[in-house]
Amino acid sequence: MKKFINDFRDLLRSVPPLIAAMFIISVVGMNLLANKSIDTGVEWLALDCGILLSWITFLSMDVMTHCYGPWAATGMSIAALLINLVMACIFFIAGSVPGVWGESFVDGSEAVINTALDNTFRGAWFILLGSSIAFIISALVNNFLNYGIGKRVQKDGFGTFALKSYVSTFIAQFTDNLVFALLVSKIFFGWTLTQCVTCALTGACLELLFEVFFSPLGYRIAKGIREDRIVGARLQKA
Image 1 (tube, rainbow, N blue to C red):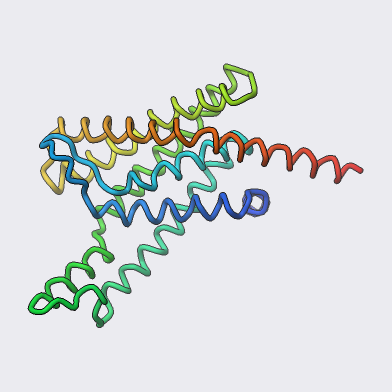
Image 2: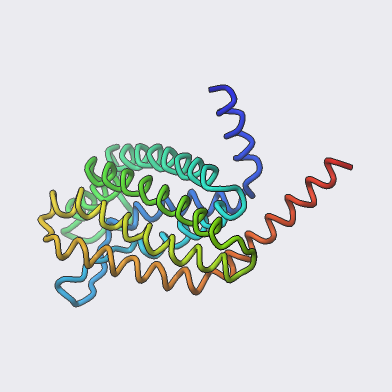
């Protein structure tokens, strides 16, 4: 247990602070933004605003898997999930304490708007539980699938990074959306199985588009981290 704690502490020190911060913020933010649905104008197509941040989450995991391996990326995912749970508790307290939100000052609607905002930040236990389960399952799928593809290709360069990221992100995002839809949307909101699958598939496609657009940036970041680690190792030996 002590070795595990020390290894995890070393991992936290080795991951660049900006990458870790963006990863954790994206995990917390996408769960909060998931409270707002996107009006697509199509009855069978269901999306939420969490998609605006989830690409950062999966791109960060791809970068960490590329540089540190799947177990390290999964460890960071667990850390981000725990921090998200802490933030969910803080949001719950903020939504429960007496007070008035600034946006609720609308003549005749103050109480309704204030209650709605409180409920948004308090969330619901089944949403938090469903999103947590979906996230950790999708993180495992993404990280180990990404690593497995890299081991089979055994080539370095942007092409390999892109292939690993595109395949793992699409499948992991589909898994994340489907697990959440089946655990939460179908049971508590009455979604049909068709809505669950189409939502998962559409979200995965949009996530893939984000990944295609931002993967060059992810590769540059990963390449920079690897080069810094090589330089650091040489300096330690010297």
